[in-house]
Structures are given as C-alpha cells and as structure tokens.
Amino acid sequence: MSPSTRLRTRLALLLGLLANLACVQTLGLMSATPPYPTETAPPEIMQSARARPAITTEPAETRFCTVSASVLNLRKGAGTEFETIAWLKKGEEIEILTEGNWLKVKTAEGIGFVSGRYCEGIK
Image (cartoon, rainbow, N blue to C red):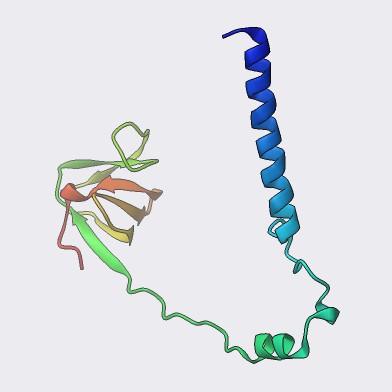
C-alpha cells in the first residue's frame, strides 16, 4: 500500500470517528443532563417523568456450591488463560455470583472465577 493510500485510509477513519462523536454529542449521550433545557420541556413530559414509580427489584437469592476437586484454581477471569489468584480446597463452600461454564464466585480469598465442572451441589 502506498503512503498516500495509507494516509487517505487513516484520514477517512478519523473523519468517521469525528462524525460519530458529533452524533453522540448532538444526542446528548455524553452528559448526564438532557439534550434540551428542562424548563422548556412540555409540562406533560415533566409531569409524567415525576409520576413514574421507582423501579425496585428483589435481591437475588444467594447461591452456594462445594468444591469437588482436590484443588481448584480461583482465576482472575473465566478461562484457563487467566492467572490463578488462589487455590480452593475440596469441600470448601463458595458463594456463586454468576453462573455459566465458568462461575464468578466470592471466597475468603476474594472474587474470581472457577470452572463450573468442579463445583457441585449448587444450592
């Protein structure tokens, strides 16, 4: 690729990024304030916003499992490529934060990930 072609490609990419940024700013997505002055919003919009009930959710049920491997690696991320931050012993009960093939768990050693196949009796 010639230097002028590379320059044109980079310039097109930069212009595209700037256009996206301008759209985000125009829509007011970069600030916590609405994209219009609130005092000029129609009264029915302001009233309906005030009348909405707060959204509440029940706390999720706390779930636990027991380590079934003789030693289980607690890792920084969901996969064997992530660093081991602690070793858990067989029979240790751990709190499950999220479920999947890899479980995000909370232990005395901290929060990390373990393989779900070595955790039994999820309750």
